[in-house]
Length: 62
Image 1 (tube, helix red, strand yellow):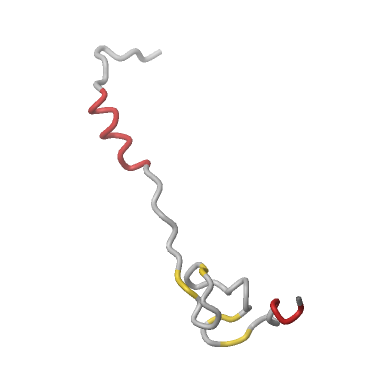
Image 2: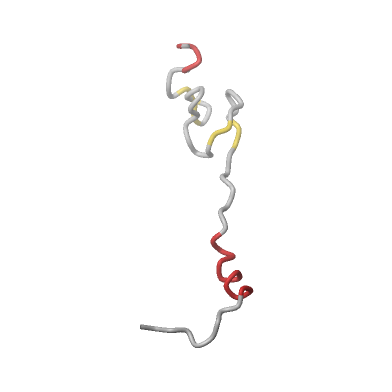
């Protein structure tokens, strides 16, 4: 079994882990209803994508 010869310093350990940080989720506003949605995805609230109405508006059914 491999055993390290020297202790890894906190600085070197943390530099190695610097790439593990989570990046924020990219969110855009829907031009139709103004709700937050993921880019290149169908809007969950109004059902539109790329200026077209794909699904029936859920707010009208409520």
